[in-house]
Image (cartoon, rainbow, N blue to C red; front, side, top):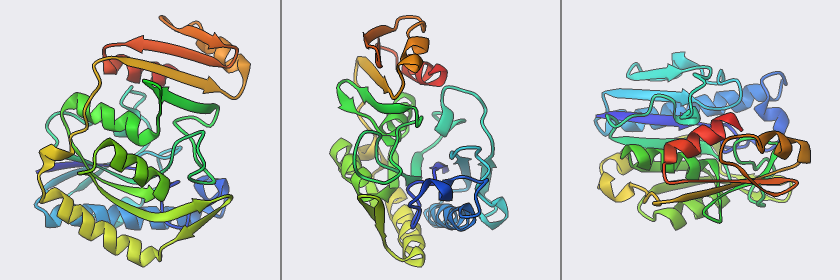
Length: 264
């Protein structure tokens, strides 16, 4: 069984401030160590469930946060960015039995985390078919486009609520809850334990039930914090300008949505 794991850092246990997500800041060291521990646990759970090939994407910022030495030998690691539209799920294809998302976070424009965002901090929010979109939704749709179910997601509580609203069969783990400019976290060791057990249990379930339903048409809206960003984006083929800060793009092909995000 082949399993794909995409890992971000803003939804990792205890991560609360932007400095903890930035490799140039000393506060990031503990965050990277916990990110590695949580990804390792997900890999171990996958191996326990029968996975013989695990592909991990380090999907935060420079994509050089995870210590590969601490992952099981079954795990291959993608470091850096391949500059492909699949982005945070680079290399995912139809050969994978399942996708898991570790350390994912609540959407931009919400109040689920002190460090919420969707794709790019220059965006106020992203919408797909008038639904506010998190990075979970964007890449769950990418997985659905490829026919790969999302079986497990960990991160903040607000995101877990969104995941359940999209597909209640996906196993979720809230390792923390955002409250204003703070987070309330479970113990890091407990998070690791629950991720390992949850991943193993999820992969032994009915994976087909975890496949997210892909819409037939996509209307994608991005609202920028700066009007000059929207002006720049307005020259992308097929773009409509909604107002000085907001652009919209429509297509029936989800790959074109991913290409749109890639160039935004």
